[in-house]
Picture (cartoon, rainbow, N blue to C red):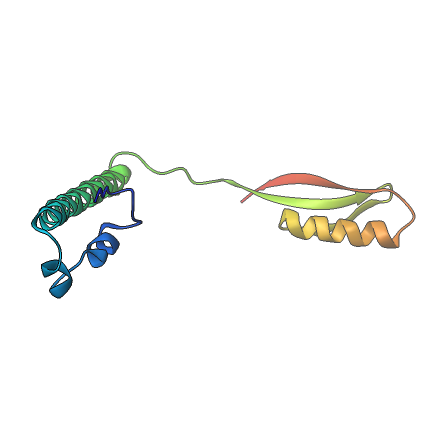
Length: 127
């Protein structure tokens, strides 16, 4: 019986599939030894996995503490402009939109309903 950690999706799933109780007693001594070794190996892998998760959590917490101190001595970037899109035609500005998706939807409506050319232009205004 050759079990590796890649045979199962999780180690817990593999541990559930190992025979216990009467099923285990019905096996030969050699099979029992193999299962015990596999069980011990899986428990070691599970502990290693927990250590890796703890290490990753520690790393994330360290990054968070670094980011908390970002404002000390340095200020974060604050945007000073706002984007907006306008639909233009040969006759001037047809409408202003705050998002590109809204502008595209309005552009399609204009193209369906007017006989002249219309297009989108992006603008930035100071806040």
